Image (spheres, rainbow, N blue to C red):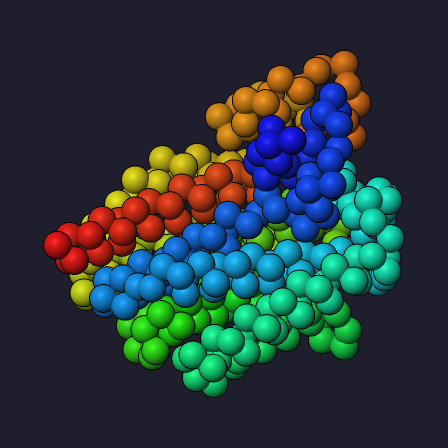
Length: 352
């Protein structure tokens, strides 16, 4: 079963030859394969607090658990409302690259709603406890994150449909998660921490831009006005490239200004992945899954490569029809991880 869990967390899928177990099913339903982005946000907030001598491991674990639950609830809310609003259908990309909780019958609609409520109830208890320990801003962070998460897809706001979903994701995975984690550990949030949350918030937004670029034509046909749809493909590709470069410019600028320790420049070690992603953005999407596989061998995990077979139809290829987001997530994980390593090493040096 552990092999199943690793498989799902890495790929959002379970290999056909593996038997589905209850934990794997819920890891698929909650889209655990993207929890790494939340984990990195929590780590960045924790390392920034550690640099200021305020790291409390037990309290940080509570925050991490709450953020992962919030992310799980967010993913399930997205699937629930996208089906309800007629966005997620059998011919839509969401149903192709990974099993869909409702469309593939992994859980009933009532079961999905119950899971969403359970995650939010636990998060409410955590928020109340941390508010008791740290003060009312904890609840403010939690409520702001919940509202943006729900109304990302839920009416009447439906932020994703109005070209505002990308901004919501930047605010959630950047300032709210990173500064919120810092607040719980340090008891306040100086202006420098809000600014320090910008680079990684931008990086996560890049991943969303990649996903929305992959399905821009389908979204436009369904009236989902994501930022790539609103900007048009060429301008959206340029905007995404500028976001990648802005991540490095802000990181270097913060380091030069003293907002980051100099070891934060380890984030520059992700430049090779950034370069590959930027090159990919300069080229059109592959026409077939096999062409995509041939061009992306270094970003597709080994276990996924072994599943590729030229005789299979397009809908049987793992990851297809995703393309830009595959490269984007590969880069985000590298850039975020190296930034965390730099802050961690700086905190160790500062402590001893």
